Length: 203
Length: 333
Image 1 (cartoon, rainbow over the protein chains, first blue to last red):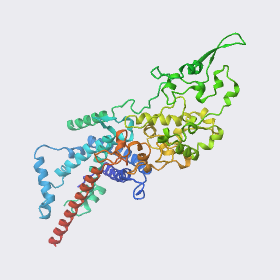
Image 2 (image 1 turned 90 degrees about the horizontal axis):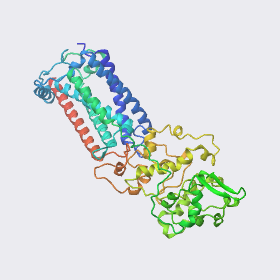
Image 3 (image 1 turned 120 degrees about the vertical axis):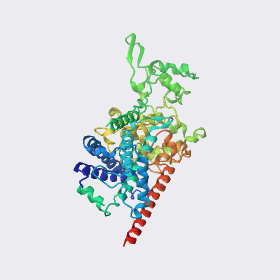
Image 4 (image 1 turned 180 degrees about the vertical axis):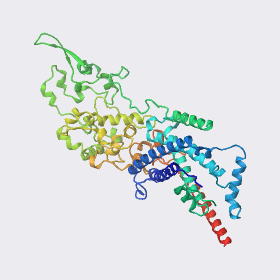
């Protein structure tokens, strides 16, 4: 089943590479010390690469949003109210116990339903909540002169940074879980190959 | 589609809120040279000093030229102007002009030889005086003698190139005046290092370009507004409030993590005034947060711990999931 058109695969690989660079350089900036300078990328280099990767990531995010508006791919991210919570419960039950008892996937992948309810919620939260907040707070840190100086008596830069590193952290956790759940296909590697070839292999 | 439009509106609203311009907050405040008459101090030498201020206290002066037999108006050399109010607000306000300058100056026209008079340096009056022991003038003098500026003393460098004895006012750094202190201290350096005419008095270099020289520094504007030149260009001495050992440019701090780290250099320099003060909300080097924010130096120990716990938990759950999958696969065989 052809599920991943070329533009999605290109966006996905750019997104993944840039995000890896951003995680490594972001951790380097946050944790660089005089004592452990050799364990992470040097601060100056980290700043340069972080800024570069962030710019590419923003451009790829624009590609993602534009693609979802102009193509039918956007429909996979629409959350219906009907039975959404109970469907999420079913999916969670499948991941936590059903799959070990040999039960069938409650929401098998079809051309109309690329994501299961849990996937859909986490993807929407990641791409339409965490990502915009990460980008906005990143712009605030890149251009500190445009960031509000105080917000209810607290420095705007601290709040911006906390928002940025929190979103960065949650998206990093998302990436770890995302990579792991991608081993849950027909074979541990089949979903990865699907994202390379564009074809989803039936379980 | 409606939902998408709603998301876009929210996005733009957030961008607008977050990028609301904080106009003026990063601009350096400049002092008005023509100060108002605000000082209530009455000098015991007011009458004597007024004879000097009559000409030197303003840009224009007037005198009777006996040879020409008429009044002459002339412009005062800018280097010789001392605004009366600035002087009476300074630390040296209780002095008579002739305490430091030759008594011969009371005569007008001044003798040309007076221009060659030997001027005092800080240590000449403040050295060895118990009253000023807390300022460690002897240590400052020792540091100055090791500094790169001292090498130019033969060409005319002295304390007065940085500290104007007529207007000098001690400023003690604290939470509320930090930005003003940074701007004031940096203005001392920029007075020569951004004014080619003044710079040329002591250097043969063909040009100065602070912006170009610091091109390597990310967020240059933010750095210039939030730290002093001396943070990177001096050797820290814990014995004195402000380091005076200006290092040669090759030895200036260029490693970002000297400041952007848990053991930030800033705590021993710009924030040494109360570096022992710690905020209780878990931020390392918390005192910096009162005036600024430094990536890497202001990491939060609670957030570090929470993120580590979440990360370990996620890895643990994934590990358990993998074990259960392996067991299921073995059972199937």
